[in-house]
Amino acid sequence: MKVSAVLLAGGQSLRMGHDKATVTFRGKPLWQIQLNTLQNLRPHEIFISARSAPSWRPPELQFVPDEPPSRGPLSGIAAALGHIATGHLLVLGIDMPLMTGEYLRSLCDQIESGRGVLPMIGEQAEPLAAIYPQNAHIDFLAALSGTEFSLQTLTKNLTESGKLRAVPVIKKDEELFRSFNQPADLNARVSQTGIGPLCATILM
Image (cartoon, rainbow, N blue to C red; front, side, top):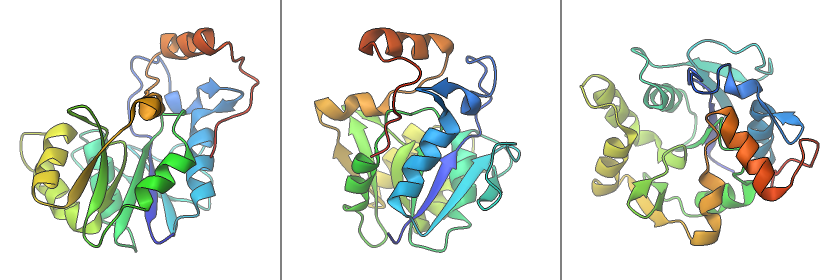
């Protein structure tokens, strides 16, 4: 697959209380679930993006520090776009363990030269499971140098300029985009599904 990929792990995890990347879900830490999902897609290269190099990072994967000043995922995506050797960057957030390789592959099938793919749930963009073209790097850098750091605003601008193609998320796939930001999110998911912590991890 001629795309690059980045696992965004740069959040401060304030609501989780500790590094959410190491939180166990279905018997595995979130970082391993998400990394396995990306690896199964066989992208051209995979980066790990965070404020500082995480202790769990596999040594064979390149670490990309946030583009300073650190502005959350905006900085991480900007930094990764500046390193990729392909025309597109697949972005996946560390806290979305329900996302599947099958869905991400469907996004990859929709990329065009100089144009990425942005899932939309209603009017809300889902920028942390999306694909950005390399030519959007300049737009990310411009956003970092300004005063508006919202990915919602930036992705709207990129869509209007033709660098992103907005695609609606069908109802049955909306659950894939759920973010787990605090312990209650994980507990609620287990209670709703009856799935214990040792059940198989969703990959593809």
